[in-house]
Image (cartoon, rainbow, N blue to C red; front, side, top):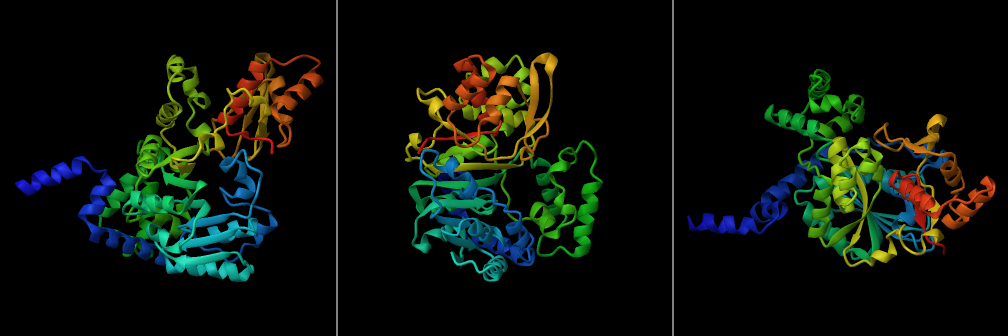
Length: 442
């Protein structure tokens, strides 16, 4: 009885991750082995023979500083001679970063021999000189003996037996003014997947034991789900598994998979002495970019802290299945990255286009010149109505002129003044919709 009381007291002061870590070290080793075995058998993402098409199209990898630099360091002069860690590099991620960043120094780590081998093959094929590869679990990142300006870890931490231990390891090698580009699974958007994962576990299927016939049966099972099943209603977001075995296994048979809400992420960062620097797809969360904006609750929601507003937006949409965000150390100076549209110098900010934006015809009778939308958004209903004046302001945002200069040019073109508050609200709206980010003048 005494030991039971001690365990209860111990657990009451620990997070779930910490309790698992303290009570079942063997389980941690087993999880590492199961995850490693899966990626040896089904390397992910599916290996590519070469990157010639990537080079020809002048593509870039998500989170690459060649395009995203000012999301990490909006008030710094752009520089690409960075020390970068790709933690959980998979089969192709690090070579793509290296092709965009020939002056960077890139370290790539992964737990899978197969993934490392595919990475090395691409390095050799494309004569890439600025990557070093290491077979290494995230938890042992400190053994590299280096610090990094930027850490990329997408789709990795949620597969660790103890995500807190993994993030603490990354924190230990991040420079004081550095950033992390992270992706964690969303627990609301993946609820149907977790039901199928549980179903398959109860049926005795695992990534290591599944046969080609089993994989075909899983596909058939998913296609036969009733229309009210959560995965049926979100099937448009999970189509690749129908043609790709690696994708199917990663989604439905992964031995370790933890989903997060945005408030879970905030708590997770806080436990590791980190903070969310910015969400990448703000429009996925912002109530102002959803149907909630017409609700009578909106005035009340506007009074809440942004993280609480975003939590409400996530619950309303209920289908965000991946959270992309930038994080930094808790000790990093907020003024080094925070964009203050209410500050005295907001007109000196320079709008920057990062993501593609498309136009649809508006409703002139309602003073809507056009609807702006972006193919990068998960949800097709994210449409931003803009007036003729607002469209003019957006078109003049070309990564070089400040908000004040854009306002003056638009006013001159229209032969009339444009109210400061209208301009401020418009650029805040463009930020919420992910159509513009901002940088300082260097």
